[in-house]
Image (cartoon, rainbow over all chains, first blue to last red; front, side, top):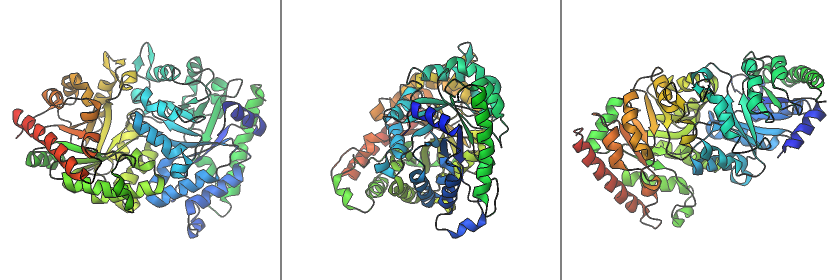
Length: 277
Length: 277
């Protein structure tokens, strides 16, 4: 469990606001790992060992584990147990349902006794409104990361709709700000939307933003920082494929480290430029 | 796998459009079942055996299984395998993510070889737009049931927002209608919104609507039918708690059957009144 203050300290200490996305795809990991009893966990373990001093968060994507049924859930539970306590552990699950059901999803990912998983934070979809989100907040110290403006083409279908003289995603942020403060609530904002970050900071001046879309999806780290960084950093920038699949050979973990180091160094420069460190 | 035509035939033959919601809560099932190796599956199996001639669909709610980790997923897989082939099997999972991730969720619930689960339909959240929904439709013959207007208080936060001179939920339906036809796409519309059904039928004249909120949540079957039924019925009305927890004793399955029968008889009368049968 990381408080907002602890998260900021981690960022300053590691000079990084990198989240490594564990979108671990059995078809993309090095072939030799398939000789291990749990290849996906073995891959994650080595990626974590190679990058843990360079990043401040890990984010397994639930779908990549669920698609394997029981063994996939086992890999996810093992990964959850292995994640370093000084990093924010985020389950990217995009859940959301009526109150009692959201409460069950919260149990699934937050209650170690119930499932073996003990994530610090979960991504949540906003469409069903407050009672689909607040059951996650009822777990003390846990974070909700609410979808605001996502990175793919489909974000244009609804998130930019004209609402109340603004856009739907602005209304989502304004409304959600009444449910919890910046110490419990973050927003997902895609890196491919760097021109929107100035606007988002009008509505979420202090919230951390979880930013996917750097690397494979084409977002620019420099632009995200220029328009989105706050005095406390306020950004957790995710990279998945560009880091974890940097090489498909025996040396994949070292290659991942080299990629993560490159990103960390860019992040360090941005943190210095903005006076955060 | 049920086509639209097969679904309509089932409704006419069984004189029912009841979906039994398998929101199976370990804290609410009869105590004696806890002596079985898989109490949740044992409960579901008996509920299914007792109701299968009275309903045309079953809908396990994923959260109730996920909250138990590996054993919960095992119960869900066993339940999926046990569901009768003449009923529509719906996984109420409310997933939705960028394209490749939604594809993985589709695999999780639609691909028997991958996970042991082979549901006919899945509930999907619309916020991330077309590329979060179409990967589910890429599985031939499978159904997407998209959230439109949900039954709980939180539905007021975003779904009724003014958009394009109408509401957000209307825009969701209009847009989604361009992604698939009524042979692959249904909408979730809460029974507590019976005054909205006339309006919804303007935008979704032929789509089946999955209607939760009858019973424990207070929706009226008569009103739903009055404003929402089409010449092909066009409704799948879900009841969970009122049926499956009708009794907590040894005779729980018979009590569930008695409740399901009451609802089926009301449904038969509505189908006759509307001239569907």
